Amino acid sequence: MPRVAILYDHVLDWGGLETHLLSLFRCSHDSPYEYVAISQASAEFTRKAAEYGITVIPWQQWGFVSPASCLALARLLRQQKIALVHIHGPIAGINGRLAGRLAGIPVVVTVHLPVSLYHGTRQTLRARLGRSLYTFLDRLLNHFLTQSLIYVSHRTMEASLQKGISPPLRSIYIPNGVRIETIDPPFDRHDFRQQWHAAAEDIVFLFAGRLDEQKGIDSLLEAVARLDITVKWKVWLVGDGPLSPFLKEMVRQQGLDARITFCGAFPQVHSFLVACDVFVLPSRYEAMPMALLEAMAAALPCIVTDVGENSLLVSDGINGKVVPAGSIEALQEAMNFFLHSSSWRPAMGQASFQRVQPFSETIMTRKVYDIYSQVLARQPAR
Image (cartoon, one colour):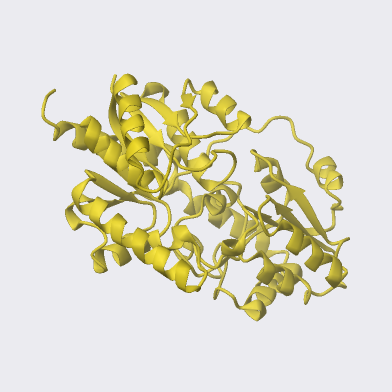
């Protein structure tokens, strides 16, 4: 059974990428491939991977174009008898591809965000030069040291092809997939809502994701501050991140502590999805967000910004509302729609559930395995 090494350069813990990887791991029990993850990982992620028979090898030697790191990683890949390297992070994409070449192992890269956005959006001279350097290196590595590039977003792939960042014949679009058929444990929706300070009559808006600049939570809070306070509503923010202290202070200054609950990070958000009424994703940029797919699989109407593949998944007025990124007024109007149009919520939720059916994790993983097979078939016998 060929062994596939998953490489990632940050701590695997909780988030969209981790959900993506766990889907690959969960579906691997009857696949022709065996996974091993080479990355730092939290105890929770390591435990979850072990449930699917996946070993996590701690690795943090991701220095920028480090010859020593590349040699050490190449040795590890050979020791683990790796047949194929599958990279999921931008820094790992540099040393990982160089190590793959040194070890004579083919490389597949999944692009979860445009390469320029992997390295932030700050506009200082240093930040712009850094992004330019990473984009230049990525272009070289894509063309010369990568057997296949998987894009989770068609928009991102098209933009990369137009800019010459990716080779057309080795670039493929495989959208993210989500676990749709979930068997719920015994669950009391009313008790769960009370636990998180929401009454039965409250309309609960949910955001789930990292609290950082990308996700646009500051825009969400500005829109929330303008909502009709004569209607009973609550907002749950599930997640954590660098902007958490700033956002909590913003809520305090708005006097909305009783309406907005910071729930913290939870590896499993399904209970929150089942217990809320409307999902909100106010991102400034995305590719194909796993959180949105999970919300749709939970039969929720969704409010999203028109970035990445969001408008592919959400049709305005059918299974939710699509608003321009950064528009406080449009976001407020979309939220007010659901406050005053409760009859639309069930129908839109069911439309979400129907729309997400082609984006199952089984379809996604089958396509990924096909790429593995094609890449390995092209390799000379060793």
